[in-house]
Length: 371
Image (tube, rainbow, N blue to C red; front, side, top):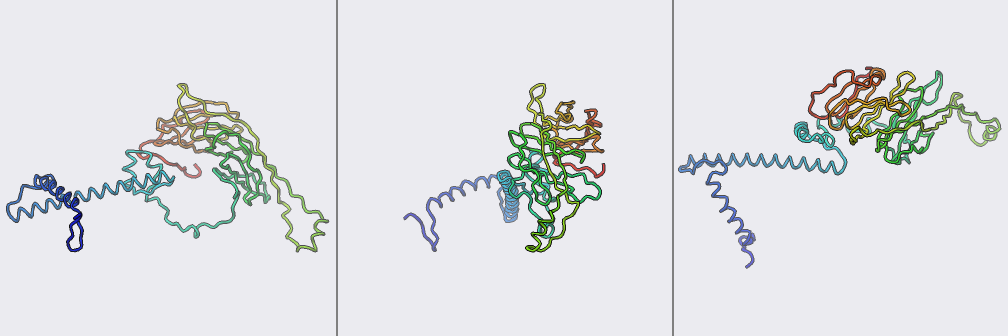
């Protein structure tokens, strides 16, 4: 027969033979003390000690296997997060342990202690309106307008950059003021920055090919013309009277024009230098563009695109990660993965030695308001 049958259970001869061979293979190793067991027992007490020792070793092995299984499970979750483009939640101890071997862990995971306290979106957020619903927005920023005394015009506009690297400007009432303006980038735009003051408006865009383009934004406010008496009389009998419009209401006319463009040149040794971040600052009547690159350098450009100078501020991998205005635009706060410091655009040099001393890579930095 192909199988043995006893009380309804069927056992294949090959499976039974493999089990017997495995037991025959394991028993000599157990007797030889592979699991750390003592010498063969001769009485009941020694046999009990030997059994307890063997049981303890098996428990330790079980705990070790459970730890390995949890580690594999965590790595599988990280792999799934990388493939799907989402950040994976990890306990603090696991995340710190993995970061020691691979700093990139901080880019694809987040600390479980920092998860949102509340996920009840309907309680804390209320939808008011949808702006530019037909655009696939990649970058956005608020352009603040200079408000004259007694005027009720808009205080800010919404600047949008879509997936085709085209610029649009909308009012907060969803009125398109500039629609899909071509910025001239050949590739994808990776950063959008606006002018730091309300005196003159411009938009700075950085392409993935290190190309920086500056466009002036001209905004003209015109008073809206009231409806003529004839038109008001003809509609008087058909529709009920509407509330009179605000006499201070103004219509905005927005145009954009290219002011300058420049790119980050290669180093003296033709190093592969990538532009990470650009920050515009204004000092009096002068405008400077501060650029941080992947080799740890900070460059200063004039408004027309001419380079004023460059200095290397960090040796950390990845170079300068971010730039923040400080002390009324007199200084610029820069940070890398393991350092931060203050840079003077006027002197094109560091003011003080950078601050260091932590192990995990720096992800972001915020300054005290008013500093």
